[in-house]
Image (cartoon, helix red, strand yellow):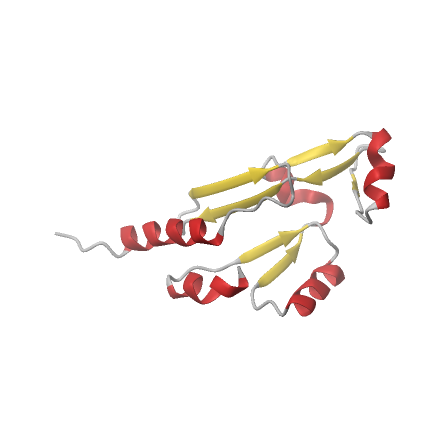
Length: 131
């Protein structure tokens, strides 16, 4: 996404990543990867929950996630743990989601070319000459 950031911005769009990491960890990600777009923290999965992309982790799998260094968010309703699904949204200025990708496999992401194509369609609609 960083490599295509100029293309995204050329269409008047912004790129924002939202992570379940702490703000300090998000900042480390930005610095380590030399990112020039916003990486925000979604502590407690509040935004992910609004998008309906949070899933509970069964207690018997907690040790598996821990062994990979994955910190799980404890919900406010007891000892339940959860993670957000991997998701990418292209959202028009009017708040309409024009492209979405949600996957349980964190390694599968929407291809930047698909995002660019969705942005082009929005750009063309906005800049379409009126008769």
